[in-house]
Length: 342
Ligand code: FA5
Image (cartoon, rainbow, N blue to C red):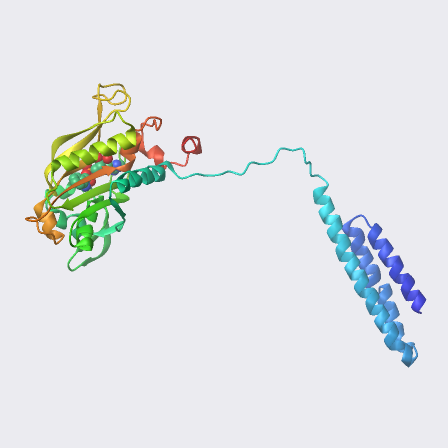
């Protein structure tokens, strides 16, 4: 009986090892391990054996069952992985993994932050969803003031705050001015607030979501020359040594006097060319912080003065040579042919 079991094991393992397909293996499994298979046939005979033989034969049969199961499993793995690797051609060139990079707006934001941080500005972030009070009221634009229209604001349909009014999507980073004054409390303040901003605008030069960067400096004795020096410094650092800025009189409720800020065209350095028409590009506004805004932020306008500026990141970026698009919305597209150039 022992010899018969040993022969059965050898025969089963030999057949398993030489089998060539998973289907062959399945038929061997039925032949040896199935209900009417060879192993069960021996098991059925065990009760007919002498008492002292039964335990030893039982153990032997069990060892054979385990060996056959293990051989079936390992041969199956061999056959199936062999089938897959059979077609592997090591000479086929590999697939180069796609490596991404920061989006060019993010790159611009990092560059802008670094330029201002090097001259002592502190980067801060204020909410993308803001209260009316910070976006307008504290900036000298009382309720129903027509100047608010300029900001084509998205209002959030939630109950108003008792003190801060309605919830809005931040229409400009100037809302960071009163927030920063309240945070710092006692000047000096040198803030650079870069954030997403939202307006109900959509055309070649306007996106409903865009980015602004807001500078705010408050201290004793701050005047327009500090503002102009800071703007010129930024122009040289961002566009190159020859770049200059120009400020033109304008009106904002939250600065007095107020200006619009232009940078010289990098292609013609202010002479006028096909990229700029007049030699200049407008990037945003600036001015000396209005006393009412200082008061709203808890700062005494008799002791302190300050300047502020707020420019569009995208507009500022588009003036760089090489960016070369005539529709701001391209920046938010997913066309990798454009994006991967940067
Ligand atoms: C303001 O938002 C003022 N808060 C700027 C300011 C700050 C003035 C501090 C004085 C002191 P204005 O609405 O002009 O200003 O927007 C500033 C710049 O944001 C624009 O010149 C433009 O560069 C950019 N901008 C405005 N709207 C859009 C838009 N829809 N898409 C892309 N860029 C925009």
